[in-house]
Length: 269
Image (cartoon, rainbow, N blue to C red):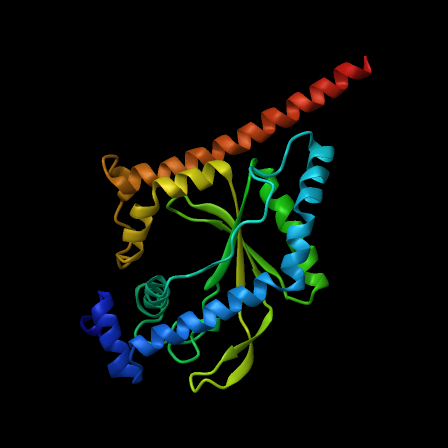
């Protein structure tokens, strides 16, 4: 059966058409961009996002009062972005085929296919906060969980820790949006909005290695290839750099907090 398993995006599009009678056309892309554009605009205008934006300075000041250091690299709201259609299709390729442990049967959660595939992908609309220190990730996650619960958005969080050295918290809110149907009527649907929370160091490494990670996402999982021993490979360098920096971030917070405690203890003498 694996001989029929798509290995390229072109083969994947053919598989969608043959096995599910779902073609990915220019109209599919236009509809996707219409929906995600409306969701982004509606989220930016929502009470929950306006509450978050208005409270950023207070969150930063509260963290500073508690820990003696600033939380954010930039004390201002980040942009809300939409996932490009090409990246969206690639993600469904990975979910349906490359990373599907049940292949040739449907993956956990079901097939991610048109026309109802947009709500099944969690990061079609997303934003990213960058904090200075590792402990700031959980600190900000807890604030978002409180806001999400208050507004009935069913918040959930996934602390990503991937083999390739990627570390970040992915928090999901589930607002309800009015979106166009494919026949251009409208319907109300809950669509996830992803809030990534990462550190300044992890943000820098992600920018540096972005092209490598994008190329790696298109490759099928071939099992344990022992890349951990191929020290000349890009995967070895990129992955272990991410792990090392994550460890160093923990040590930075440890030294920072220890210094603060020693300073406070000295003041009591």
